[in-house]
Image (cartoon, rainbow, N blue to C red):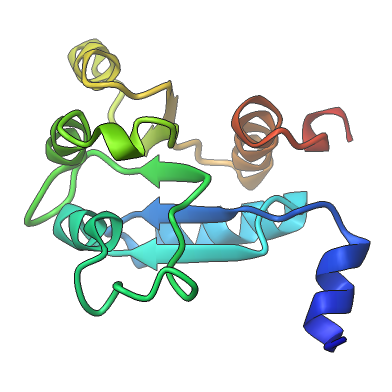
Length: 155
């Protein structure tokens, strides 16, 4: 048995999280928070909504599902180039095969219209990106406990 298999066996099942975020700084901080909270073994970072649609559709270069699995959770920014987060949510509504994948919007937008529109288009959660890392860590722990079945919220 490989070291990776032993490591995976010794910890709780770590789901794949799809992080769709155009800001490299924000993506780094979210990945750091996920790692610190022990949430995801694999975080796949995509830079815009168009990449997210390609990934979720299994279009090349994402056609190898062993390497690019359907995520257990999507963390989605709203304000992105090419296709916005709202566009991705609208597209997801046309894909019943992906209806089981929860989408949590993680955005800088505090606009109540954006929140309402994201929820109307199927987002299960809406979180405004905090300034303090500790607050981001709490958001990640809540997301883990609520949508990934983890226990990091109680840690």
